[in-house]
Image: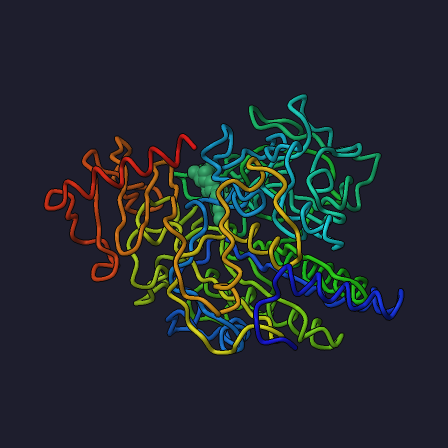
Length: 512
Ligand code: NG6
Ligand code: CA
């Protein structure tokens, strides 16, 4: 295999050469495009896996990816919550440029516009089969609302995926069912699904009225006390669809199995798998194989389950002989939270473990733990093993970088407007940072070199329900991340010029 990055030119050269050898060689050349798997964890903190400092439990499968690939230490999700991060990853566009990209309610309509190519759409154009398996949380259907009992559209298949098997929103939101392509899986037409986010419907017990039926109690300060599905109360009410309802303990196994099938079915041709695990989002109720195994309660057990999932996917790739030509990217959609709505003892049992590693804040926060996340790239064919990279990179850069990798050109300025081509960095061949990066937690921050500027904001300093410092301050904040990664010293007053310069730069990016 070539030792230099797979550039557009090298693909072109391959295809030209193959013309001499006829159709068969063309097929071979096409096969040489690497398979791409993104394994996207949910709410996994910067310090939550052992290759990023977790001491209390081991995550050998995730660690192995790092050992065999590049481990990034300055990589960011687009936002400090799920929906906007996923929007950024799949569109290459900062979510705050568009309305309605905050945490999507369970009955939200599709928020990804169909008028520009998405990451999967671009890879489809490059000849890939593209699958979304796992958590979606980007809305479904139109503003007219969703009828869960008929074909549900638009959804993943309308924005570039050729196959989808998804949980519509989050694990804590109804309807608690899987949707495969356009249809709810295992739905009995005689028991139709109704969903409501305004008021109770049907006769299902709720967490509020029937707490005796719960296996896990919601935090009284955070809601999550509506319809009970699988002995856990959720956000929102649903009735019907009993044969379609998931069992929380089986979700990881089901998704993993679907992913393995997709990989096996596509072993002859390039595929892109966007695998969005439900772990370690609440409600955490992993399989009995993991429950009680971490010594850290269900949150730690869910990390073990996530690591198992990674191991299973890698094993599937290996056993099909696809190891060398499969790029695996592992990351998380936002930073960590302990109590996010259920009393599952995550805070009581965390001990001296810091889910955000050395970083301040957590999920929802403008401080570093909100969006700086583990980010690992493994591709034996072209990524040197065992490297670390301190390059500043965003998940938003995957669009342009993977376009470069697969020989696609971005067709216009509207396509992936915030994505930088960081292919050389993904391959461990360059450690140069992108010029700057905007992170988003309601309030916007700009990171540039060593500096981080947080826009003044009137928001609360602490979200008391989840016990996380949100990073809001009415005064500008400026930190020097190189020597103050924990954001302890706001040096804005000492560097007014820097503050003005970064504020202006952020404004310029906003109005781009
Ligand atoms: C919050 C929920 C939280 C979680 C989060 C979404 C409350 C009080 N809290 O609004 O439990 O569902 O949304 O998490 O409702 S995310 O990772 O999908 O962004
Ligand atoms: Ca999340």
